[in-house]
Length: 484
Image (cartoon, rainbow, N blue to C red; front, side, top):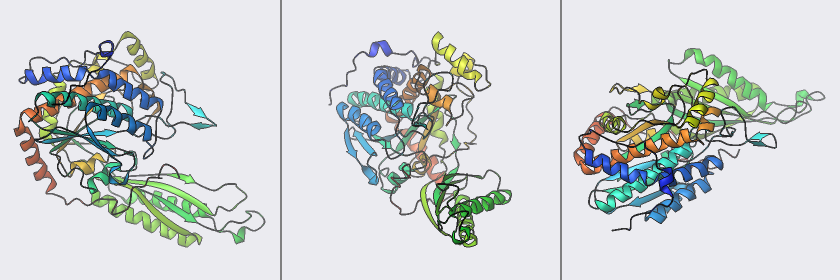
């Protein structure tokens, strides 16, 4: 049996989020609470450090190393650089029994760096805004590592109940890190996968998401003086604009719920030089993976047509692709029970004042009860109008995720407000709640294996409807997609 991990200075950071009562599994709830509370300090240290030093997809070297260090010191066996990604890792604990996987994301978003203030104060240098955790992956990582430490404590006291794996998953934001881990077979022995995500509300309701394929269209033309010899040039930027025009016209003729968006990542160097190189970066989304693939083919046709019409050449690099999430109601109900019997999030007076001020920037009035209460649970499958590489994991193993109120109500992800609050007590308290709910859900699975069997039964029934095939094919991880 491994020596139980001891925290120092934890008492000053203990939060009262995880008080459980009047639940059928009182013993499990009490165990979850005691295990989780003792690790809140290390959760905060991880989340705070990652918020202060954000790193983009596939470049999360310090963030990944920090999580690995904490887990390795606790006695986890850590395998680094898995599936061809230097920042990806799998940390294992326990000897025998069902395997529960915890997913830990870590990447930040470009240009979203702000100070943790209720007004927008970008962090920049040389005119460039730094990266920032506007999707709260710093909290995601801290909460999952905290749950892993708590579950290691539990497994020390219940050594025959199961094993634990923590998956350090890089580049969720467009790099599809988990997809490569799925392709490598790293989830083949996992019985159930658990995760959470920062949000403006707390919920365990089952949901699906949008499948997504993304890539960069690079056009190559001929440079020339734009005034003295324009006839000698062939504009790569013209090709990008022609492609974009055709795709924008295509929007009228796609199924409802389709999402297509792009940014021009390179448009030339000077107005008086015909651009010999230009690049546009596209995302295509739909709840149906097959529809995403068919729409992508239409984008390819538009790009080829643009190149033909402008006498340029086009190259396409697929940088990412994910499936929609396969929901699991059995697991969602189990997670919801943990949420319902947790003490609501309580904010200090200072945190409430911060919440009120930042809510004004969202045209929303802050209400503490609204922030603290979880959303009503429904077994009806909702569609989340975003994409995540958790989707590919969910097609390999029964998977459930919860959201926790780390931001005030009305805060969209990928905004400066989300980035700001991810570095405050508001974010940390939501993280503590999420970590405890993950811990309790895992304990319920370990202690009552029939829950695992019920989740697997639903999983097999749902996945039979479609045959999974990776969106990324056999390409290697796009390790430089944030560099160029």
